[in-house]
Amino acid sequence: MPSSVLCSPTHEADQFSNRLNSLIKSRKSDDLYRSRRIVETPQSAQISTNGNDLLNFCSNDYLGLANDPRVKSACVSGIEKWGVGTGASHLVCGHTGAHHELEEALADFLQRESVLLFSSGYAANVGVINGLLSEGDNIFQDRLNHASLLDGGWISRAKHHWYQHRNYHDLEETIQETIKDAPKNNEGINLIVSDGVFSMDGDECDLKKLIGVSKKHSGSVMIDDAHGIGCIGENGSGIVNPEQFTSADVPILVGTLGKAFGTSGAFVAGDKSLIEFLIQRARNYIYSTAMPSAIAVASLKSLDIIKNESWRREKLQENILYFRDGLSLNNDSEILMPSKIAIQPIVVGSAERANLISQSLEKNGILVSAIRPPTVPNNTSRLRITLTANHSIQEVDRLIEVLSECLS
Ligand SMILES: *Cc1c(COP(=O)(O)O)cnc(C)c1O
Image (cartoon, rainbow, N blue to C red; front, side, top):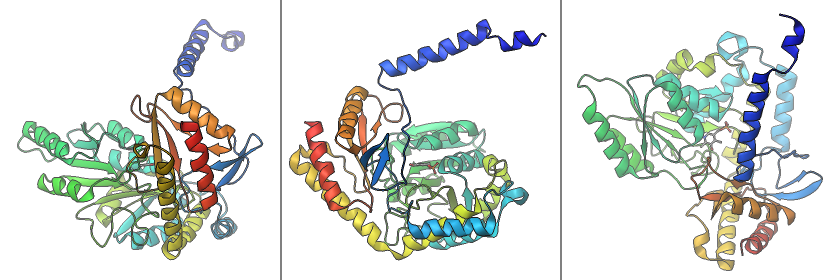
C-alpha cells in the first residue's frame, strides 16, 4: 500500500472523529461536559489555578498530608535510597523492602494478618473483585457504590445484583431471591460489597446490619473504606473498627493512600489466605508495575502521623461541625445531607444549576466542583464540598458566607 494512503485522512477516520465531536457537543449542551483545570501549586487549603488564588474545598487530602514537610522528605529519602521506578511488577522484581514494610505496618494498624498494595484504589477494587469472582458467583452491591466496585463486578462475569442504598432489608430480599433460584449444589461465592463511607453522599454503611445479613446467608463482606481510613475511628482505623469487627466479619477491607494518607496507591487487608489468593489471581496486580518505593516510604510516614496526631482528626471534625452549624444558620437546615464526615454535599438538582453555582463560587475565590451524572443519579447534581484539617475557621467562615450568597 502506498504510504500516501496511510497518511491521508480516510472517510472512516473523518466519520470517527465526527462521531466523537458530536458526542462531545451533546455533553456540552447537557451541561455534562468535563474539563481539567491546571493547578499551579501543591495541594493545600489554598491553591492557584489560571493565576487565580482560590480556597480549595474539593480535595480529598482530608488530613492535610499531601504537602506535609515530613511526608515530602520521607519521599525524597525514599528516592535517594530506591531510585524512582520499580522496573517491574511485584511478582517479577519490583517488590521492594519499602513496599513490604508498608504492607506489614498497615496490617498491624488494621489488625489484619496481611496486606497487599495496589497502585490505586480503582485498581485494588477491580483487582480484588475480578480476582475473587467468576461466572457462577454473585455480587451484591449498594446502588451508590463507587464506580471502581461496579467495574470490578462487570469484568468478573459474576452475576450482578443491586440493593437500594443502605437498605439492608432490600439486600436480604435480593439475596433470598438469588439463592432460591440457585442449583442445590452451588458452591459459588456471594460477595456483598459496600463503600464504608459513601463518596458522593458522605453517609456511612451500617456495618452491623450488613454483617448480620451476610452471616445469615453465608455471604462474604468487602468494604471499601477509601474515605474512612485515616479520618474516622479512635485511631483513624476507619469504619471497620478492629476492636469490634474481625476478618470473620469483614474478610476484605480496601483502603486508598490517595486521600487521608496524602500519597498515592491503595491496599487490601485480610487474612493470609486472601492475600495469597490475590497474589495468584488479581490480574492488575500481576500485570502492572509496582508503585514507586519512595511512595511507600512516604506513605509509611503518613501512617505514622495518622496514628500519632489525632489532633488532625479532631480539627477536621471541628471544621465539619462548624461548617454544618454555620450553613444551617444562614439557610434552610434541609440543605445539608446527614453526613458526619469531611464530605458535605449540597444537592442542587440540575447539572446546569450545579455548574452555575460552582462558577459563581469560583468567581468569589472558592473552589468547589460540581458533581453531575453519571457520577450521581439524574437530578441530584451537587456541590461536593470537602473539608480538611488544613482549613482554618476563618476559611470555613468565608465558605459559609460565599456559599450562602451563591445559593440564594
Ligand atoms: C477515591 C475512591 C476510590 C479510588 O481510589 P484511588 O486511589 O483514587 O484510585 C475507590 N473507592 C472509593 C469509595 C473512593 O472514593
